[in-house]
Length: 312
Image (cartoon, rainbow, N blue to C red):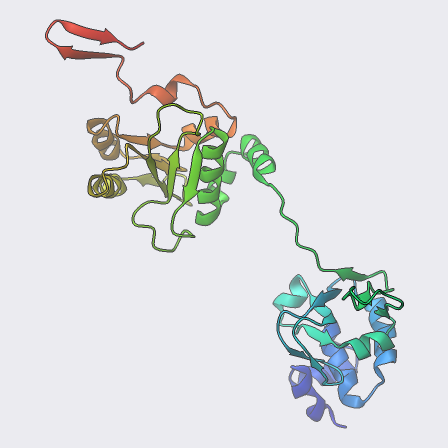
């Protein structure tokens, strides 16, 4: 069989494949498996080679098929829900276009990657034990709270606030509102989805005797020198006027605000509040009771002529 016949099935050009044959280039592991398939090498021999190759640029992973697949070696059908072995490139190998391969139970048994379970009770629907090969990993999904490590990173290097993606920054603000003891809810299901002009709504905890509803608009900036103008403030205020059940509104950005934006917010106090980079750094340190959080509240109010109340 000529290189020109094998190269298309492997996913590379004929010249590239020929250079691999003479040793000047290397095939990705998953492409090498496809080449072995094309020349008819038994899968048991291929599997023995894979046992030595995986680990640096590939995972051999046991999973259950989320969708129907076709075995990349023998062509057998892998039905949805059935166990199979997945050869998954990662890192630069994946970025270079190396394919993901799927191996059926029959091929995986030849490779001693799977072991059939015997003498199970009839009610037990398990079919396979974990593979014997140590490098074959079981697929696991684990939820990890990254708020504490992220806060420590930002405290040690405040520039991390500008490196967050817009969606990550929105999640960060949501987490800080939770840390304050508020009940906060994201709106719209994502940064780039419709949200009615509001990213987050919040209420006090149920133990608080005076409930209210607040609205937050989150504005992310990559450039730390980029200042937020009054446009988003007007938009949020318009939403609050159209939906009068909001008692307070807040604009949060990871930079700061222009003088026009600050002036607009001053004329809308205490309904509209601005929180910028310096405020976020206090939030990261879990300093939620600083006097700066009360800056929109007047120190003294006059109810009528001759009657004033000191609020300090």
